[in-house]
Amino acid sequence: MKRILTFILLIFLTSCAGDGSKIIPDTTIDNKNATSLFFYRTGGYVAGGVLVGLEVNGNEIAKLGTKEFTQYAVEGDYSISVYGTGIGGFGMGGGRVTGKGEKGSKRYFLISVDAGLLTSSFIIDEITETTFKQMR
Image 1 (cartoon, rainbow, N blue to C red):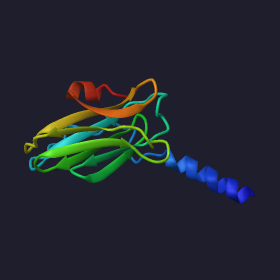
Image 2: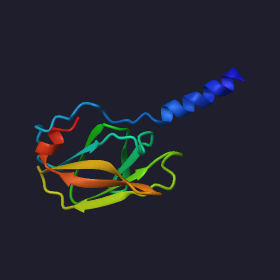
Image 3: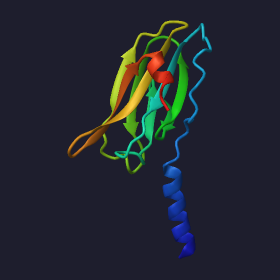
């Protein structure tokens, strides 16, 4: 019985761990051949235990927990999707944004929760570099 409880507890603890970083990425690095995309997920009580799946051009690049950062380089145009993952994300809506990639450019995005009365969904908004650097 102890083994079963330990196994169940282990599943729940690992399902809340994102693969992003709590440290702001270095935005001074120049990638002259691609567009650099930077992402930050806000913290909060609503959907705090749900990981955000992050896809760029149909490829999953990260699962972010609260207050986590990640970055990704893409060549050409891009389509970004965010959605809830795991059991907690079931039924949560997601967001999408598209953009035109330019070599050497940088784009910054904020992922947050739009909490409604009966439903919640993840949204993604483009923000300025200054705002991105102030995130913690």
